[in-house]
Length: 87
Image (cartoon, rainbow, N blue to C red; front, side):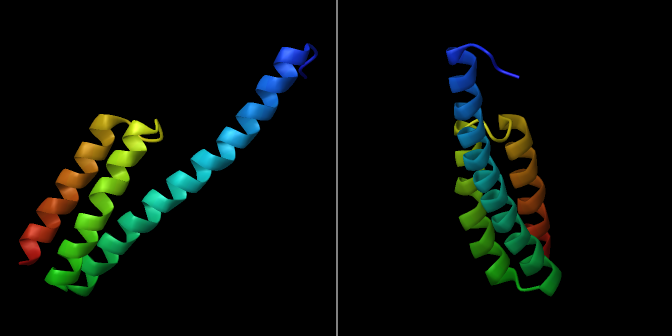
């Protein structure tokens, strides 16, 4: 447990930051799920629009430090390939 004032403050900051990061991660997953569902339904137009919405969200996660750059690129690449295969 934190004893010094600085350690206590850092613990509070980490707690708040964790909540923000959870929300961001959840938001990214929601967008990715939207793309997945559009692909599953076989709707090419919906899949394209969902991917266009998900891509900046994923990259925002990279800039915020939620997702690694290569991970985001890999996810976008694989989803784009699956969307392209639909149409």
